[in-house]
Length: 360
Image (cartoon, rainbow, N blue to C red; front, side, top):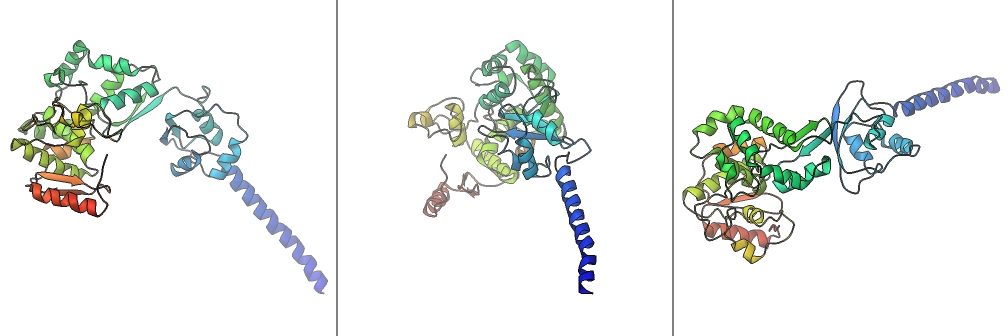
């Protein structure tokens, strides 16, 4: 009797094993398919040194692949061109084959369209490099267009927020600050620099529209407001802190004090933040941007020093009043505000004592 019971159990065990195998095989096969049937565009930024394997976790986080294991397994079967740095427009409706060959730049799978990401706080030198890295143009072509007075005059006639202030000969790059950070799509790498700028300026025009009356009612020109916003973008990491920092700058400006902003000193010296420490002669140089110079009292920089995001611009148009004249950020990006220089010096001493002092 016991032998018959064992024989009856055998078909059940075989059936269960078969079901588990079928379910597992189905899941494995599905892991090679597209994540979605719907078109969901996703922008991926590939950085210097990344390869197809190291990109797996990013693709999973962005919801472009179902399984990193299946992705890497399938990758072994493909003969792909080396992965290049840049921005890639992918889609959640791509299966693994389409996705990988799109990354590889296979023309059969590539629409030719490109997406270029311009992040908040980038200056014009950095923007020129981004354009050169993603299109068939050089950085010098970008700078040349920025020096074209006929072109600049046409822009001033087109956009209400552009004035002759951008043609001040002391300004390094005429459209600095006015190119709104965002992700922009273009037909191909042959896109003209003028067309890139047009999209960015059109976007600025659209996003500024709700604030136009507020801007026109301000005691400051939009060029001045944008200059302060471009400084605040680099000095603090949250919109609320940037607004408070902007008010400190207005307080100091209205009191005929030097703004004393390190970020303007770096820009004036044409050194990117974090690139290296400044020399004393650079700190003391009386250029049109440096607000740490002894000749900068009661002056704003001649123009913006970065391209701020719309949230920062809006926050800096008329920030909440405060009576602060000093601020400093620690290495964790927390900003401390003070009324007097004595309080400010005490805050700095305390940060150094606690190991929180920040240096570029």
